[in-house]
Amino acid sequence: MTERTFDLICFDVDGTLIEHPDGLVIWEVLNHRYTGNRQINKERFEMFRSGKISYDEWVKLDVEGWMAAGATREDVYDAVSEFELIEGAYDTVHELKRRGFKLGVISGTLDVMLDRLFPDHPFDDVYTNRLYFDDRGRLDRWRATPFDAKGKPDALRLIADKHDIPLERAAYVGDGANDVPLLGVSGYFVAYEPRSKELEEGADLVIRGGDLRRLLDVFK
Ligand SMILES: [Mg+2]
Image 1 (cartoon, protein in one colour):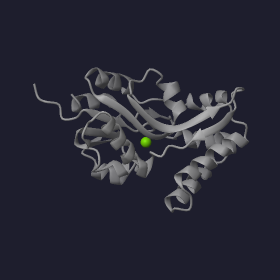
Image 2: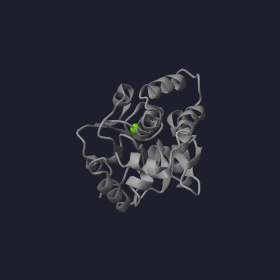
Image 3: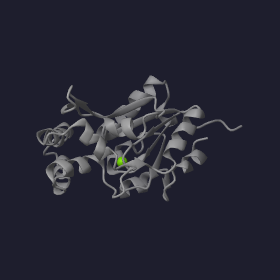
């Protein structure tokens, strides 16, 4: 029997475990739902990228916009229902868990995405943005994750430390520009249907063609 090379596998969410039929992320769907504006996402991303606003301020702008429009839990759940798990994602992560890997999520998505679309997920550690609803089901608070984009490596270190696993035995699976900071940090990087050229070029392995069960041939 060959010895296993990795002990921990962390995943991004949007575009990696969950997808929208039009390739959107939950932020885009909720911004459109509550502001009627699709342009807002590009504008705010650009403000973040150029350093005009912080990540927390970006989250605040979006979530406060939804609150101002009267967002409810029911509404948000309805938006989440536009998404579905990536083909093979369910079987893949449950099988990886069965094989004994520690599993984590490091994502800029919203907690409701996993809670609703993958309630029986086997992840040991989950880091995402969070939404909170009041007694009447109205969106009233949020907590921005410190672990998106440039913060992702910090989360990987935190999870690896917790389980006493060296980073070279930690792998990561992601698709987007916000996963780039993990290149060279995780011991192995899988770019799944990459939407970032830099990720595609820097990854140890690129998976194209949908079914996430291909990971089961990589992580044995
Ligand atoms: Mg992604």
